[in-house]
Length: 148
Image 1 (cartoon, rainbow, N blue to C red):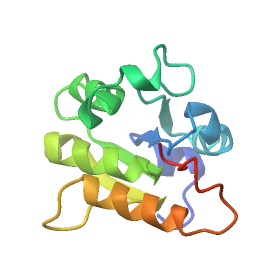
Image 2: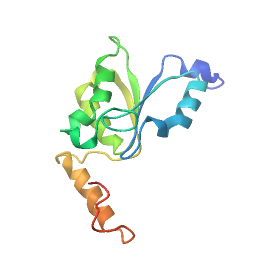
Image 3: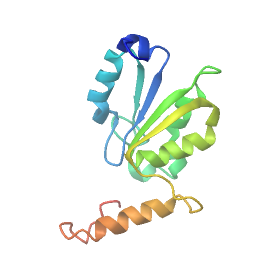
Image 4: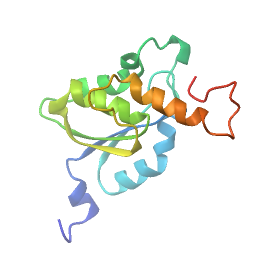
């Protein structure tokens, strides 16, 4: 919409922001401010055991459980409402899961420097590839994997 104000462009758009590993909703604070000032509705989520979410990482039993805040957000949308999903880093995996579970609730997904599932491979394939890449990085202490 050439010439439209931020509010006119943003009318009706709802963004759901999903963080990466070792982050929380807090990492989106600047993006939230910019999107809201442009007239968009924004939800920055804490995945299970991340950010302000209660619980510990060792209590999260599955990737679906980790992604539950996103899945619950999409399940609670009013009929016919669609969102723009934005994921960073490992948040891309949660986006893919949500898109598969709720294809009618997602208008578009943005993978911002995010992990994308490999076609025809199990979800753990990407995690294994990321861990292997980090473990090969010589600056890290090999005794403590960064994705453990």
